[in-house]
Image 1 (tube, rainbow, N blue to C red):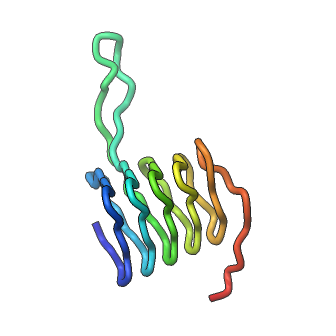
Image 2: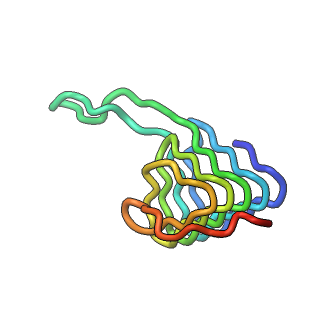
Length: 114
C-alpha cells in the first residue's frame, strides 16, 4: 500500500490489499469503507470458490469516499471525485465527478479548478 501526504482513514476502514492500493494526496476514506483488491474465478459445481486473483485499486488526489462505501478490485477513482455513502464502486470513476448508488453511477460533474 502506498499513501501520499494528507491521506485520512476513518474508523472501521478495511483494506484487503493483496493486489495493492495507492491513495493520492489529500484523499480520505469515510467510516466503514471496504476496499477489496482480491477476487476468485468461478469454479466448478463442487467448489465455486475458484482460483484467486488480485488487482490494484488506485484512488486519485483529493478524493472523498463517504461512509460504508465498497470499492472492488481493479477500480481507479479519478482525482477530485466524491463517492457517496453506501455506494458500491465496480468500475473506474471519471475525475471530478460525484458517484452514488449500487452500483455507483455518476450523478454530477464538479468544478476541477483548485
